[in-house]
Image (tube, rainbow, N blue to C red; front, side, top):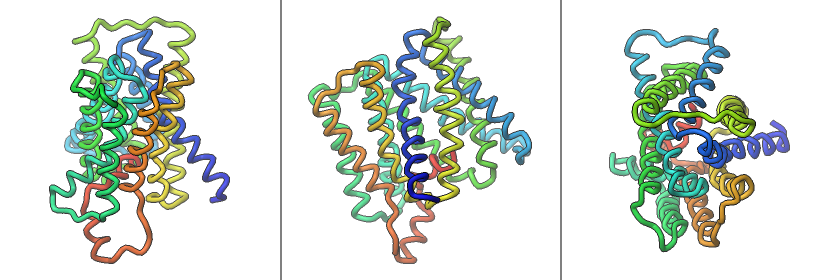
Length: 304
């Protein structure tokens, strides 16, 4: 692929990923967190399912149960917790915490006996230091921080699930149905535990359209185009741009005050994610074999 085209599409895709956080927080002024995320994934999953109708479909009860489990953690768990966290913390802070999932995956892999490079452990260390710096002196176990961490844990679990079941499904079909499942679960939880309401106006309508079309369907399509026309490891390593774009969009859209230590902490967290994800050339064969068995911090983004 032409380097200019590749760079442009990569920046556009990570930009769309980053906008999901501030746009969601903007939408929370007109509806409840679970209702907003439920609407997003119900429409996005439904549209993507229609686009994928001619692709190979899941067969058997086991396949559908696996999709439901993935939808529970990926769409319902990740975005449900993340949306609620923004009632207490900024969208930029929530994005930084969510970006720590690859660091959690590496720690989990190590506990399971996987050997990683020193570079990757260095990435974990500075990544978590970055999270601490981001929250400065007010780092505490408040509801927003705990909810954002719960979202990152759900993302980690979802990645482990997709590593196991992903090869058996068409990627577009799996993404569509897990979003549908997540959307339905979120709406059920909204009606059961919230006082669901939706104030329909130009801004709230724009939020839904942006999140359904651009943050879900367009971003998904572009991401898989990039992965299929480039080196997936190299492309995925640039996911560190997501929290950077999120911080910038939070400032532009919401006027969120960003202290200097948030920039420093965010930069360290992004650097840590980059070091964990970056796949250099020339790995020894034995190391490649071990890495193939390890939970891959990139896989969820590649599959979903």
